[in-house]
Image (cartoon, rainbow, N blue to C red; front, side, top):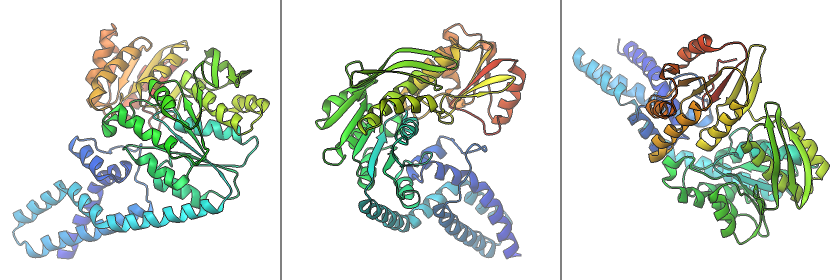
Length: 472
């Protein structure tokens, strides 16, 4: 009977623990961020992000299973009073997150050893290869810039890039060990949430070239200040190889500040005083046309990509590609061939409606650009958004402003985040938006049902930081 009770308890406990474990993994195994998410009730419910069975998570769950099973066995074996047994069950279930913290620290020494081993192995491999190494960081546009630059460089070189969002130490390490072969160039996207994160990544890659995309208040909740964000992104410039080159996207005050600060070989883009910039920009629902000014030459280019942010990413990428020897005609051809990066102002058309998938974006500048694109379309316009997150003390103000921007463009608003709901609502109403056309959905099932009621022939739906998995 003890064994049966223990088995039943453990099965139920693992199901209950799934959401905690998913949050733990989604937050990069960062125990501080995990506890903040738990105590602020930001649980990982829903299917948009699922638990990934990595080797690390497998090790974690095995130990978690062994310890929790032992705990249930002790309760079932030694506690004879049924009310006390149930009381112990309740306590164990309530404090599942504390149990995750315990297992985290028990495994931490082993995980650090494994991490150091693979990083050292990746560095040794890089040292043996004659490969040009490019690092890309910034608050916004890293992945898009990486993809655009890859398309340009592939005109002349064999290029290896970090896939998807493999922009952490282990992501870069895995790319080097598993993907890098007889390539000419390695492009490493570098992400950060804390001061020192980029410096740690440069120790692995030791880049010859660096690109700083737009810098802003992304992850301000963990960085605490814009100064810390600037300091962290500048770590890439400070750690390029000797005689390395750094390209700065000059479309933000922070980037201009860091460009002036940097004393090495540098190039400024997206600024008319810079080496490379765009002018005579024309954007419509079919794409963008503009003059690309590079090294005082004018290239007339066209692209399917939408939004000023994408144009800035193209300009910045073109600057480095040009410096690496890509010919003008190849730049024009590559820009014309560019496809939208998934979930970043990506157009999805069908015979009934148009979807603008900007679900990866989570900053006010990007949202503003997405809404500008939305305004170019005819037909009924619907915006679906949870608002902006990880904004720290600026979150209420940022979401109020988002509400005002949406109100100036949309016919309907669907809000998917309880925390941001009132701020977006207040912002929209302040711009005389009809309150009866603002809806709140607590889950994706309700969101889908509501969209089925609101969508009409030739309407346009913008998913701003929120695309449900099951929407086609």
